[in-house]
Image (cartoon, rainbow, N blue to C red; front, top):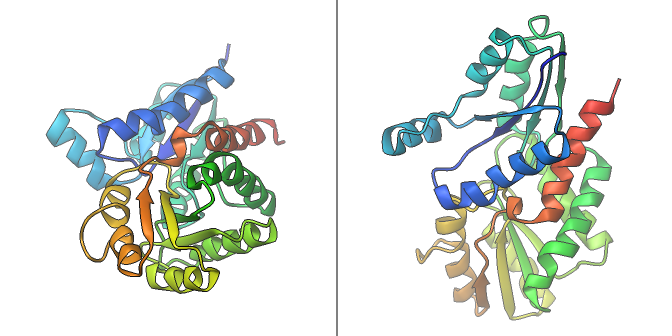
Length: 261
């Protein structure tokens, strides 16, 4: 019987509690959905891998190590599923590493990040409507993504347009390191007229960015900027991996990779 594995590749987090609630929850549900596959883990952040090793004695493979291990152990089919949101630099690195193993593993397939096809955006909007909008209770909902200088940052603008098109005009997408930034989003919210806001990280984990850039007390955090503009702010520090509706989207991507010919 051939050996099959699903390698779940995540950026990673050094926050143990959110890792259990998000990354491990996704891995566990993928394993339950596809019982014929062994589930393996890799992180794409060497900094987090190093920190976990030094602080907790916990070893997590980088993607290269995980792929080398699967090849050496004789796996014949490997599905690599990232838990990244967009097709950015981290995903490019995964693709490059996986491509180096073509020929070493007989059947090697790639799943896609959360926001890849137009259908993915539509599905994400419905997950936002189902899982996140109720948290706002009629207030504005601000989804804080990571953002990047990579051209894939345009994904956040496409998501915003999809939300508007779906009638969710009180849901705003902002980013820590890209466009729209916090100031851009506050400007749009002023025009909307609502004075209450709920912030949620649009990231798989609720790690450092969620704890500090979103919900921190520093004057440049999203919470502080919104409060300084007169908004009553509530921060929901929960990663997308905590919500079944978003875990399902990653599972659907795995299924598509398995079923494609």
